Image (cartoon, rainbow, N blue to C red):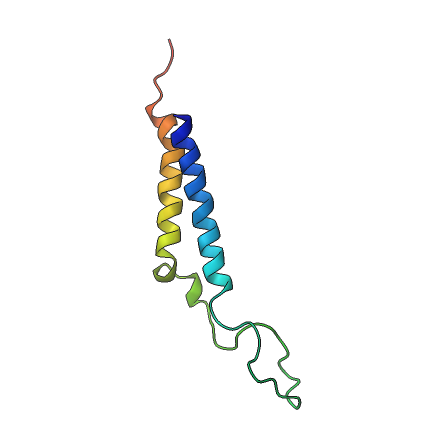
Length: 84
């Protein structure tokens, strides 16, 4: 049962890292051609990224890894027989 819990924890961790990596590396983090006259918006964030990167469609693999990992973490508790 320890191996199942370990695999579940690993899948959960990998799912979180996968989703974080996908959110960080999606889009450019700086202006490709900065304009010296434009000082109104000096930021490292993309201009038109929106919140689509937080949606389910782009994060399916990470969410699946997290769900399977959570299930594997809960499986030993669900299969344990109460001692009398």
